[in-house]
Image (cartoon, rainbow, N blue to C red):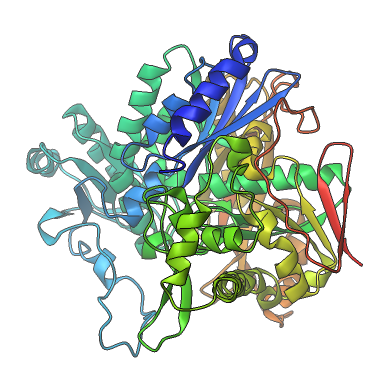
Amino acid sequence: MKGSGARSDASQRAASQFPKLYNKEPMRAGIDTGGTFTDFVFWDGKRIVTHKVRSTPDDPARAILEGLAAGRPREIVHGSTVATNALLERKGAKTSFVATAGFEDILDLARQNRPHLYDWFSSGRPRLVADDSKFGVAERILHDGTVQKPLTEATLRELADALANAESVAVCLLHSCANAEHERRIGQALREAGVRVSLSSEILPEYREYERASTTVVNAYVSPLMAGYIDRLSRELERTRLRIFQSNGGSIAAGEASRQAVRTILSGPAGGLVGAAAVAKSLGIDRFIGFDMGGTSTDVSLYDGAAGYTTEAEPAGFPVRVPMLDIYTVGAGGGSLAYFDGAGALRVGPQSAGASPGPVCYGSGEDLTVTDANLLLGRIDPEKFLDGAMSLDIDRTRRYARDTGVPERQLAAAIVEGANSNMERAIRAISIERGHDPREYALIGFGGAGALHACDLADRLEMRKVVIPAHAGVLSALGMLVADCVRDYSQSVLTDDPARVFPILEKRARRDLAEQGFADCALVRSIDLRYKGQSFELNLPAERIDDFDERHRRRFGYRHENCAVEAVTARVQAIGRLPDEDRLDFTAPAEIPTFTSIYVPPGWKRTDDPAGNAVLVRK
């Protein structure tokens, strides 16, 4: 079967071609584990070296160790899908939930919102905590932090005994964002007993009990798997400093990622946006739409002078309120499966062939995918896939296409059209539906398959400029080497003064980053604001709170000039700057060709800049 030796070929090629680079002491590596491929970018201060290996979903660390077969870098910045996959596949730790007595069912009660109001067959909200794993604690703190009912030592001992054998525990007491004393005492007691604990006052010290509880439970659910994964990598790479990329576009120490794995849910896509922003800056582009099409999914984002952030993500249906780059994900990638539904209509995605078995052309897949369609249309050279490290079986793909009874090129074109429609809707969702005209933005296409579809999407949206970065196929891993260390801190201020809270958060930020080796850091203040009585907020820089009315009008189409504005949450983002000698120069020469096939349809003209970025404009 063609392609079966892709993993060993890539590792052997890395070992034979780059031994001098691998043995250099200053080398850093960015590694992005995707659903289909694991991407590697190496930087020795002068050159960029890239390669890919097939991901190993059953053991993600195996692909990483294969890709590092030639040697060990000094530092690795790693975007991991361990937390994401544990949540999506429901393979996390058995989680217990501790709440104030009477509020044990807050996760099931949730909000009044019903996403499937008229669906008689809806399975209801997903659950991560079983009924017999909920525990109520006799204590009560009021909204202003006043203790109404103290937490007694007897209650604490009883709880510790009940949870002595728990695998992972999430603690979310009522109003702990105003006074975290009771949560801290519970956390201390359980940790002394050897239990892994996630406290809401550490994960998300913000008001709204349901979202705070959900975020804490998700962290408790995925952190044990992340900790085991990181421990294994750390043992195998004992002389390598390991940092984990976060959803907010920055990295954190591996130990911290073990404790707060919820912050890594979208780490891979975040790396891509950081890399795209670096490419855009080099080209003088300050407004772009990022289009990251990988093997399993497509991630789109809008960059309007700066990256957008959100605290309202719901991965796998669970509210997660930690700050993350505003990235919209759809199940459309090179490995998206094409099939005919019960009515005979062609559908594409969201199911994916993944790394195993992969598309039909990989030699083991049994269902046609978008990659197969691009191969049949001549957009991919079957002998030069992954720069020749892996060949594609076009004859096998043609046999499977013939079995459908639809002419080969007609079928392939329809599959590509279906995938493009799915991705166009995603771009419209983050642009037109939010008041942005995509015609005013460039489209930066990256990911393993982005360059094959970028021009088609630009045509659909009447966009005039498309950029394909020189290292488009591994841009997420490259972005991880460009990014700084970033930490987020927040505190609800509904009953407090932001001016008092900001210095407290900044003191913590300086201490934490100093422990990670950053003697100095940049601190950025922002505030979540709303009209009094509203149930949603807008985040503004602390020095621009007077712009709230206009920002509200732009986002929602109206403003209440005479309505009182209240502060809800104070936020501080701490940025530890990388030393200049560690920061990757993405304009540096590449040691090997990149893994990107660019499809330029009629009506488009291509030029390349000195750094190798392809710029396509409509004629």
